[in-house]
Amino acid sequence: MIVNTVGFETLVRREIVRTFSIINQVIWPPVIQTLLYVFVFGLALGSRIQNVQGVSYAQFLIPGLIMLQVIDQTYSESSSSVFQGRFMNSIQELLIAPLSAIEIVLGYVVAGVVRAVFIALLITVLGIVFVHTAPTNWWLYLLTIVLVAVLFSSLGIVFGLLAEKFDHIAVLTTFFITPLVFVGGVFTSMAFLPPVVQKISLVNPMFHMIDAFRYSYTSRGDEPLAVALTVVVVLAAAAFTIALRMTAAGVKLRA
Amino acid sequence: MSIPALKIDGLVKRYGDFTAVDGISFEVAEGAFFGLLGPNGAGKTTTINAIVGLAKITAGSIALFGHDVERDWRIARRQVGLAPQEYNFDRYLNIRDVLIFQAGYYGIKGAAVARRADMLLERFGLSSKAKQEYTKLSGGMKRRLTLARALIHEPRLVILDEPTAGVDVELRLELWSLLRELNTNGTTIILTTHYLEEAEELCDRIGIIQSGKLIALEETQHLIGDGSLQDIFLELTRR
Image (cartoon, rainbow over all chains, first blue to last red; front, side, top):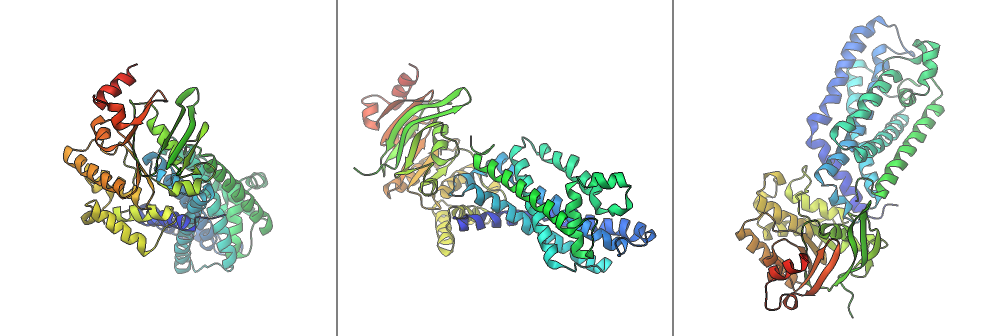
């Protein structure tokens, strides 16, 4: 599958160099945002809520906030990198090299996973320090982050390829990702919502991701873990396949 | 007969209804210094893009040292280095890393690559700027970096798309000297340029494209005869 392993590793390393060269855009904002959410919603307003799924509201919030940042950061990573590469033509360095479509797509995706795990761990530490909560199932914690990172890195590649200007990349974030994440269970359990809204939530993909991830902290969720994970796996596989096919076909890459 | 460095056979490239390259065929022998000339929009850059894999081929075939660029693309791409007309460096890397990462994409890493990068930076007078981003370089330095990057993986064929566009006379002469040295050491070179005296000075064989068709393909001296390349070029392209 990967023949040019050095080329693939080089692309992953390049993306990580890029991430850490814009640290004020990609590392500190999620950390500061999470701290603000924890203090305002978790510790201030949350003190009025008894408990959710057997934990304090602040502890309930942490897994949702991690997912929020994992989704946002992985999409931003690959979409902006691919688009910028196209815009500046620097992506031609990859296109003329002996790198296959799968090596290129996996390069961006793996870099997205690395960025996601790094940011998730930072926020996890904040959760341990400020809210005294930590994952109880680290394997599930890691698995869910990897799957969600694969999904949104792949979507980032797709939109990075399709976009004609930077503004287009923001369309998915503004109109789909952010609203769906916010109503997908970051701030509240489905059990608190009216039955009709609960049913609607089932078609919100973010709900399944957040619910699967919350299992790694609370060992509970609003739906069976197998259902939540299956949805995430299917979506990640579909997004990866689309990104791969578009790259292999040279969509907006090779004239 | 030895395998040519480049063999183009009936290359056609269409963008929708527009035919950018219309069935051109030619060969470039290994070790040659070949000039690909033509007016703006003639199809030179499209041909180059098809050779290096940036443009999909509509019809025909291209082989580099006997390796088809579509079927044996991995091997074919290892044979060629491209110095594009525009500066398309990675803005997140310093210029030494631009070279090292480019080698990485070609599957090469380790101390040997670092040494080659340092050697190229030295050869092209860029050593003092090794840790700087390319945006800090002068136009002439960027041109030299483009060439250094094309050479980092030791290609047997280097394609230079207007390598001296916008550079002063001094740098142009310096680049000519570098290119001659490269060619003397066995690297096959394909050059596109709008400076006809450059092609006349450097190239041992010239192909002229107009409206996607190859309208001349001759040894430089044979093509020019007693005249000048400029006269011949204008005569051919104004027909």
